[in-house]
Image 1 (spheres, rainbow, N blue to C red):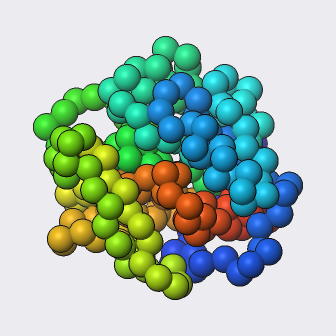
Image 2: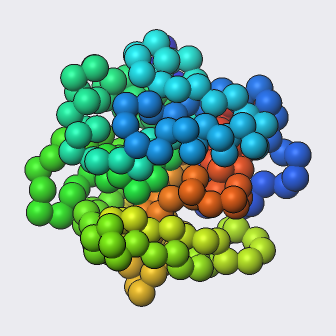
Amino acid sequence: MTKTVKTVKTPPSAPAEGAVTSSLRVGVLALQGDVEEHIAALRACKAQPIPVKTVDDVRAVDGLILPGGESTTVGNLLERFKLAKPIVERAHAGMPVWGTCMGMIVMAERVTGSKQPTLGLLHIEVKRNAFGRQIESSEQPLEIEGLDGKPFPGIFIRAPWIEAAWGGAHILAYVDGKGVMVWQNNLLGTSFHPELTDDLRLHKYFLQMVSAAAKR
């Protein structure tokens, strides 16, 4: 039986210390990209990271991270290994999914100037490589709605930005007026790479989403 996702009106706030338990099994799509960095961050948060490569892996986790990499390649690999449909089905059933950089592109409904395959989960249009080439990579302090404390260190590497959002997608952070973080019920997207920093707040933020979904 398909689980019905309960609509959440406002994005979650930052979790309290100790709110995340070690019982959470969080998958990291392990086809390409910053897999090990996300796994290390999840372990530091006391969660159980699971590399996801098969349909059975998708069905076994409580939440899923789509890491940075090359979006066209990963989109094609998702279709080749028949992972796209089960990920979409589980997301529609309420499983939290977080895409970072390339992962956000793969989750988007539309990609500016491209017909590349995506999962079509996030109600956003993204522009690839919007912040420039790899040589123009940068770190920028980000004020993120719902995240307490100092600005978050946003690491942008050939990063996309959000051109438009609709249908419940809520922008949580901006750079020069362009969206770089989005929340939509059980879905999260970031243009930047939290896994490349020592700051665990966004991984804990996602784990709070996973914990809340597991209780519904």
